[in-house]
Length: 316
Length: 317
Image (cartoon, rainbow over all chains, first blue to last red; front, side, top):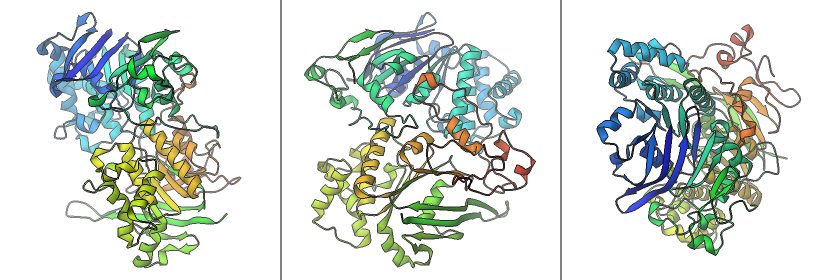
């Protein structure tokens, strides 16, 4: 459904993103995971064709959606896809909704614009979608303003807008980060059900490895604008090859063992202006040797997953 | 073991004054909360947004006054203290805030930020200011070379370390940590938690740790108080114990393990936390509880201990 190959993005002279590849079929959930500043959201924006808004452009690589190349697509054609066949859920539902407009019309607009429906057809569809998202009393909700709703409810409305035109691919950029844990669980379950019921392809962007473990089929781990490990979720968690992946998993408390000790990852993610040479993770890596600071590691296949590390698969 | 803190029947009611178009309303942000915090222990307070966790933190430092209840710190009745006495005492009880971005004055250098507590208290550090700054920054794992930087030049994790250094400047014995890692990346969160563990061991600190993340609280704390709409609904004396309150069980079900083999069927809790204004009688959780019966809607359950594991539920699990 969606295939991204060697994507590279530049803002003027700097290239914050390079060498990102993944593919995704219908009914699959792909997790893109990494710390803030690793290029996850930029990847999402590239797929959605929203880079020009912030002054970026794709300088290499390809994004193929349902057989169609998107990197060379002109904006009018992109507009027809975006919202219709490619849906986006952003991190902050508070800023994704127009505070001055009632909920009903905001969701209706999607069907009017993309499916050519009349206002009353679109409203019937909106109420139907709000119902499938388990929003109580959809008719009443349509007449509310965003400020009258809780964060979890607003995030459901944003999901409803993303689904209104029945997209094939849904890109969810940290959809639960701003929410309470019980609401996060509700939203994750909702997304899971949608993938199964509608045969959606879901790209889930998150920094939380436990969310990935719960929902995803495949995983791409990103660091400093590059994919550094990818594979099926079981392989990534059973035998993470890259030290960064191992460290990310180690940041989540597993629970009941008293011997458990969290260490975190020393240091911080480099900014785009000082991406390290060689392996981008080497300044923070406990296993780094001289070669790591000079040579960029290539992907090494290991079972079903692959990692870009000179010492991939070595015991941690 | 002596108690660092003894909190008894703490309540805080906020009122919203009426106007031409609306009636006056009252809400109980914190309702009849009692607990002991033994010296050297870490108690976690967990609950969703709006459950009164942060209000409780502010009440304990007397940044706001409780409507009713008593509070002892090292056996001393805090509510009898005058503002001047209270100000002196606060040197011994400090707070680390959730948002390191707004907790530090952007115009202050890091050095000035960590020395500000001495200014406020009108005290001098033991050694010279430079020595003190070096010692504090080293204590929280920051390079003393950062002393001349401004907050905008350092990362979020480093800022939270500065927030902790400020809180430690006057060598307090109690730290109230109000969601100290909520705005940080998981990798940085783990660093900060590991720093807090080490500081507790090195300095013999007592912590009240407030968080919405139950798995983090279970990892970090010795005991857990679970709050829902201003009340403590369960007090787990040991973090390994299974939940007895259906709300705690839901919170535990809502956290995921970092292992796809432990993937769970999410039994999602319907509905959301109700408005704290004009609560209906009975258990505040009744409307969302799968096991609620008629008695839950009429009588408020009281926190009662069974085998030293208090729970406020008519039908504990």
